Image (cartoon, rainbow, N blue to C red; front, side):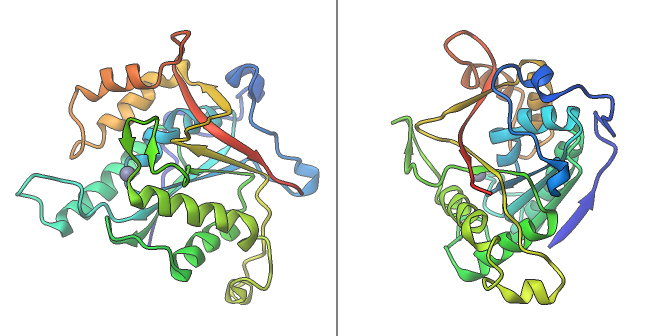
Length: 263
Ligand SMILES: [Zn+2]
């Protein structure tokens, strides 16, 4: 497990940021109730280095601009993600971790955690559920963003990687009910971590998205962050992103299935 704190991003300490409605338009994420002990924190849980920037990088940049603290949790080590024979798995892991740290910092994401499960070999387990639950209890996020675990095939067009489905499912389960209930993973409480209720869940890669985030003002930042994953993408990723993240009206959007949880 690795923690890298990066406070040198594009939008450091955005205390001058306006309200969410000024950045997000009509569909605004929920606003934490600070009087109730809720924080402006968003946790993005992604299977591989680069998935967080693909799925929610624009939204993360907007949240940072609005003064939120955003953290990425990367579940696997990315050790299968190259056809380049010069990469050993070990060198690929260190390269992709560094790429993810730099890309996250570029978007203003405050910290990145790497859980270190083996790429392509992720299985649902108590160990995985416990690791994600611990991250939620430690960071105390108001909102969690992750892969939609349900689709095996997305938009009748491509297969949803099994690491994505398993990371998403374990994260949904950690949000509710595992992180909330004190008798789940009681060793966390012994370690001083409190239970935690996440208020909002956002799932990308959904076949039935319900919530569009207009990322037009940060689209070029999302593309630049993806290009920082140099072991994964070349310049052609820019046009791919501009086309793939465009809605029927020509807006650049990240689309999620949104779930608001009970207090
Ligand atoms: Zn992935």
